[in-house]
Image 1 (cartoon, helix red, strand yellow):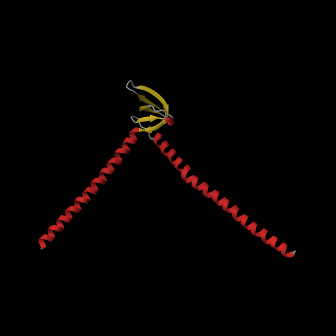
Image 2 (cartoon, rainbow, N blue to C red; image 1 turned 180 degrees about the vertical axis):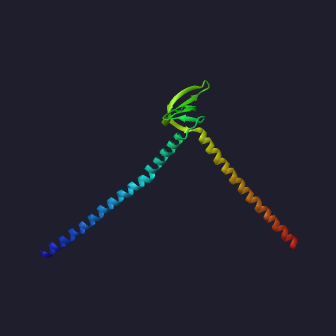
Length: 148
Protein backbone atom coordinates (compact mmCIF):
# COMPACT_ATOMS: atom_id res chain seq x y z
CA UNK A 1 0.00 0.00 0.00
CA UNK A 2 2.82 2.34 0.88
CA UNK A 3 4.52 1.64 -2.41
CA UNK A 4 1.36 2.64 -4.32
CA UNK A 5 1.19 5.94 -2.41
CA UNK A 6 4.86 6.61 -3.08
CA UNK A 7 4.36 5.96 -6.81
CA UNK A 8 1.33 8.28 -6.87
CA UNK A 9 3.31 11.07 -5.17
CA UNK A 10 6.21 10.64 -7.58
CA UNK A 11 3.88 10.73 -10.58
CA UNK A 12 2.05 13.83 -9.33
CA UNK A 13 5.31 15.69 -8.62
CA UNK A 14 6.65 14.89 -12.11
CA UNK A 15 3.37 16.11 -13.66
CA UNK A 16 3.53 19.34 -11.64
CA UNK A 17 7.06 19.97 -12.86
CA UNK A 18 6.08 19.34 -16.49
CA UNK A 19 3.02 21.58 -16.08
CA UNK A 20 5.18 24.41 -14.74
CA UNK A 21 7.53 24.12 -17.72
CA UNK A 22 4.55 24.22 -20.08
CA UNK A 23 3.25 27.36 -18.38
CA UNK A 24 6.55 29.18 -18.80
CA UNK A 25 6.96 28.03 -22.40
CA UNK A 26 3.51 29.42 -23.21
CA UNK A 27 4.40 32.79 -21.70
CA UNK A 28 7.73 32.84 -23.54
CA UNK A 29 5.96 32.00 -26.81
CA UNK A 30 3.50 34.87 -26.30
CA UNK A 31 6.34 37.34 -25.59
CA UNK A 32 8.17 36.24 -28.74
CA UNK A 33 4.97 36.55 -30.79
CA UNK A 34 4.35 40.10 -29.53
CA UNK A 35 7.97 41.03 -30.31
CA UNK A 36 7.72 39.70 -33.86
CA UNK A 37 4.43 41.55 -34.42
CA UNK A 38 6.02 44.77 -33.18
CA UNK A 39 8.96 44.52 -35.58
CA UNK A 40 6.89 43.39 -38.57
CA UNK A 41 3.76 45.52 -38.19
CA UNK A 42 3.83 48.33 -35.64
CA UNK A 43 7.34 49.72 -36.15
CA UNK A 44 7.11 50.10 -39.97
CA UNK A 45 3.70 51.76 -39.64
CA UNK A 46 5.03 54.32 -37.15
CA UNK A 47 8.00 54.99 -39.43
CA UNK A 48 5.66 55.60 -42.39
CA UNK A 49 3.48 57.95 -40.32
CA UNK A 50 6.55 59.91 -39.20
CA UNK A 51 7.73 60.32 -42.82
CA UNK A 52 4.26 61.51 -43.90
CA UNK A 53 4.15 64.04 -41.07
CA UNK A 54 7.59 65.36 -42.03
CA UNK A 55 6.49 65.65 -45.68
CA UNK A 56 3.37 67.58 -44.71
CA UNK A 57 5.26 69.92 -42.41
CA UNK A 58 7.92 70.64 -45.07
CA UNK A 59 5.45 71.82 -47.74
CA UNK A 60 6.51 75.01 -49.48
CA UNK A 61 4.75 77.47 -51.73
CA UNK A 62 5.02 76.29 -55.33
CA UNK A 63 5.15 72.56 -54.52
CA UNK A 64 2.94 70.36 -56.66
CA UNK A 65 0.90 67.96 -54.52
CA UNK A 66 -1.66 65.18 -54.76
CA UNK A 67 -4.37 64.99 -52.11
CA UNK A 68 -5.83 61.87 -50.58
CA UNK A 69 -8.87 62.37 -52.84
CA UNK A 70 -6.68 62.47 -55.96
CA UNK A 71 -6.78 66.23 -56.60
CA UNK A 72 -3.57 67.56 -58.15
CA UNK A 73 -2.59 71.16 -57.51
CA UNK A 74 0.12 73.68 -56.74
CA UNK A 75 0.45 75.14 -53.22
CA UNK A 76 -0.37 78.88 -53.16
CA UNK A 77 -0.76 79.65 -49.44
CA UNK A 78 0.37 77.79 -46.34
CA UNK A 79 -1.16 78.33 -42.93
CA UNK A 80 -0.80 76.47 -39.67
CA UNK A 81 -3.43 73.75 -40.21
CA UNK A 82 -4.55 74.32 -43.80
CA UNK A 83 -3.23 75.12 -47.26
CA UNK A 84 -4.66 76.73 -50.38
CA UNK A 85 -3.95 75.04 -53.70
CA UNK A 86 -4.50 76.09 -57.29
CA UNK A 87 -5.86 73.43 -59.65
CA UNK A 88 -6.64 73.14 -63.34
CA UNK A 89 -6.20 75.49 -66.28
CA UNK A 90 -8.68 78.01 -64.88
CA UNK A 91 -6.62 78.24 -61.65
CA UNK A 92 -9.39 77.30 -59.27
CA UNK A 93 -8.31 77.76 -55.66
CA UNK A 94 -9.21 75.21 -52.99
CA UNK A 95 -8.64 75.32 -49.25
CA UNK A 96 -7.55 71.96 -47.79
CA UNK A 97 -6.44 70.62 -44.45
CA UNK A 98 -2.74 69.67 -44.26
CA UNK A 99 -3.57 66.07 -43.34
CA UNK A 100 -5.30 65.70 -46.74
CA UNK A 101 -1.97 65.91 -48.61
CA UNK A 102 -0.90 62.47 -49.81
CA UNK A 103 2.16 63.11 -52.00
CA UNK A 104 4.51 66.01 -52.66
CA UNK A 105 5.38 65.55 -56.34
CA UNK A 106 8.07 68.24 -56.29
CA UNK A 107 10.05 66.49 -53.55
CA UNK A 108 9.45 63.09 -55.14
CA UNK A 109 10.80 64.31 -58.49
CA UNK A 110 13.84 65.88 -56.81
CA UNK A 111 14.56 62.64 -54.97
CA UNK A 112 14.18 60.64 -58.19
CA UNK A 113 16.61 62.98 -60.00
CA UNK A 114 19.14 62.67 -57.18
CA UNK A 115 18.92 58.87 -57.31
CA UNK A 116 19.37 58.86 -61.09
CA UNK A 117 22.36 61.22 -60.81
CA UNK A 118 23.93 58.93 -58.22
CA UNK A 119 23.41 55.93 -60.49
CA UNK A 120 24.96 57.75 -63.44
CA UNK A 121 27.94 58.77 -61.30
CA UNK A 122 28.40 55.15 -60.22
CA UNK A 123 28.27 53.99 -63.85
CA UNK A 124 30.83 56.61 -64.89
CA UNK A 125 33.11 55.64 -62.02
CA UNK A 126 32.85 51.98 -63.03
CA UNK A 127 33.57 52.87 -66.68
CA UNK A 128 36.58 54.98 -65.62
CA UNK A 129 37.94 52.10 -63.56
CA UNK A 130 37.51 49.79 -66.52
CA UNK A 131 39.29 52.24 -68.86
CA UNK A 132 42.08 52.73 -66.33
CA UNK A 133 42.53 48.99 -66.05
CA UNK A 134 42.61 48.60 -69.84
CA UNK A 135 45.18 51.39 -70.14
CA UNK A 136 47.37 49.92 -67.41
CA UNK A 137 47.14 46.49 -69.08
CA UNK A 138 48.17 47.92 -72.45
CA UNK A 139 51.05 49.83 -70.79
CA UNK A 140 52.26 46.60 -69.18
CA UNK A 141 52.07 44.78 -72.52
CA UNK A 142 54.04 47.58 -74.19
CA UNK A 143 56.69 47.46 -71.45
CA UNK A 144 56.97 43.69 -71.89
CA UNK A 145 57.45 44.11 -75.65
CA UNK A 146 60.11 46.74 -75.11
CA UNK A 147 62.00 44.48 -72.69
CA UNK A 148 62.04 41.64 -75.22
